Image (tube, rainbow, N blue to C red):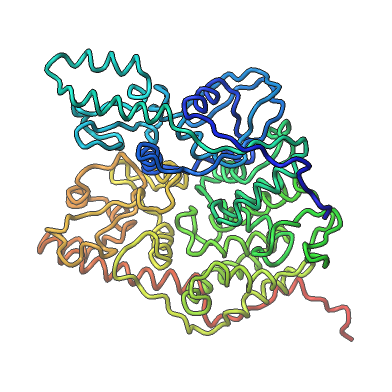
Length: 560
């Protein structure tokens, strides 16, 4: 790796907050494409404004001065028609703060709830958007603009507390006059800026690993629309399969694991031209010489095949039902090497997935890193059956890892996710239409959420369910907004046995509901759910079955 350095040190100065937002609104300040993921929420924006009001430092900005083409920019809720500029300023450090300020101080920013912030004149503090806007709450853009501020108080009339005007004027003045320290870098080499960005965001660990990886290998700014990125991979697979939002860290690990068996390795020399690591030793790479775009495309294709396997063969319809993310990473490596495995391999892979799910808490302690390091190395190019057998040997064939039936239903726990898969395997039906739900129903209702909670409905309130309020029996997998309410009444009125049995509401449980009441019904349903859960796991894990190799894959040429 060649030595990179700045010939001229960055110049230091300050930039007024009013000038900063004006330049951003005018399109002079740009966000490089490798930084466009905005991560702050409204609480972060409130905290930023509060720090400015108190006169606290909010950190330095690092801005790259360079020629900027004419462009239409999207920053948060704002769309900006930016003209060409010979001296545009590109944000190397400070993106979250600049986007927050540009939006929260602009009247159009409130179309995004993260930027709909008010100042409470009575409590003298910034607050998130309330359900009811009281008379002493003023929107931040109104507070920031002096003419709008005067008009707002004029509309309040002479009886409005004049002390509020004093408070508002003081806060507005502090906002407009606030100065932010800034460094300005003038260099033509984008690689130097990327190196600076990487170092800054590794010292503080402020960015996710996937974001740093994207920055390191982002390519030229003018080619951004042609590049497959990690967020685009997430969107494409979700659109094609309805599997939901795969975490970006998992997508990155999937790209890496296809190229080398340890997806936790250092990423800084991943696409070095000579395949050498930062220490000068040759990196472990199954695809030497491969460029960034090919790695993304092939990694995305293998990940897509792994998702389809989970949906079609393992009863895992959605990312929110996935017991451990690391298992998807391992499957991606397998499907990268063996895109069309035999039916026997698919059956054994299903067996491996569910055995590892059962053993995960004991063998790997549920650790992503432990699974991601131990399992992919068992997969070798050119040996489909050998790879499957090696994976199976990690856990073994004896039923030593019983997965406990959860006493409480929590959609972020591996055991509850496994139970959701067992419910999905039963083919749950709608109480409204009696039709079986499909994967697109799950995708629609879960959306960008990270758990399956939106797809699950509680049957009884705590007053009726008592100590069984959090038990699995008090929940139904109903991925629909069209179900009758309350769902407890729909159960009592339902007469279709196929519908009821799709939710493990069989004759015994139904009689308990009709004859005795909710609590007895939940006790009986809990028993049925546990029986089904154990039956599902028995069929999925196939403990004690012979992990036989497909006879068609055996080589008998050497036999006499």
